[in-house]
Image 1 (cartoon, one colour):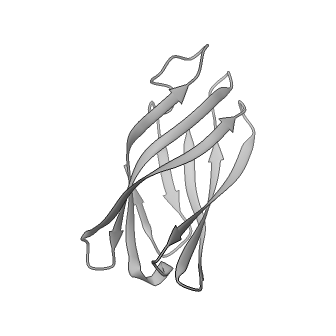
Image 2 (cartoon, helix red, strand yellow):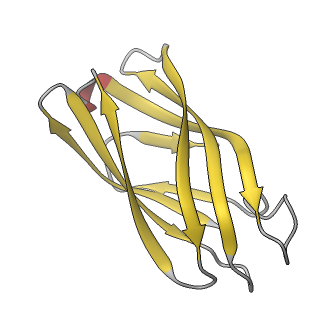
Length: 113
């Protein structure tokens, strides 16, 4: 499983984050929801939220966007993927969303997990 923060754009008083997700497993994932922690530029927790990446077909990239209200992108310093809240992957089992998870960024916001 690979999740890349591909872009982060400020839109008014919100940050729109675009992720490219690739399910590298041999079977589809019906639903993947991650508990995510957003840290401000000073390293303090800004909020805890859930990112629902929805259905992730095997071997096919998908782009998902999330809007973080009340925070400009330059106010965010780090995104922590705390773990999978929901992972529905019948053929793979519930650990499929966390096993071999690779996190990357192309934006100025660090992504860890």
